[in-house]
Image 1: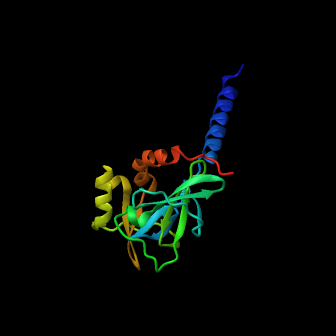
Image 2 (image 1 turned 90 degrees about the vertical axis):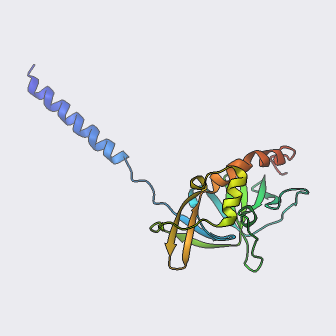
Image 3 (image 1 turned 120 degrees about the vertical axis):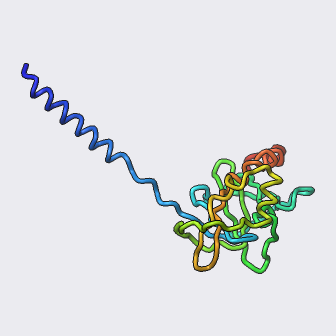
Length: 189
């Protein structure tokens, strides 16, 4: 057998594998950020959001923290409703039409924001802005590092907006939420 055709076949196979591998490598999807207001201006990654909706019926929980507004029904599942402004050390702006951000599908969590302003493309990070004081106090009380929750500050024409990692902020609260929901059935009839 002539070794030249075998070498050519190996070379063609290698080129074909390289070509197929390059076709399967896709660029990561562009980061989409939802601009919201709740005791400040925040950018939230849309990858964690499953819905944006108007507030619905809410069942209050007695003796719960100020940031825990109660429970609601999201597609047949009991979901805790958290006030992002209160969680960040601020106050909900009742003059604005509130919106609910629904996070997750299996075990949804609802976050109340004062206003959802739409999607934004990431801007160049601001050099060295000072994080909001209320957020720093909340992060300290939860034992979170600033760089875990605050991704960066971006300068836009309408001011500085902080890219907030909601999952990192809510992670320490997960145990408290689990205890709250422990006595509540997972499905609503």
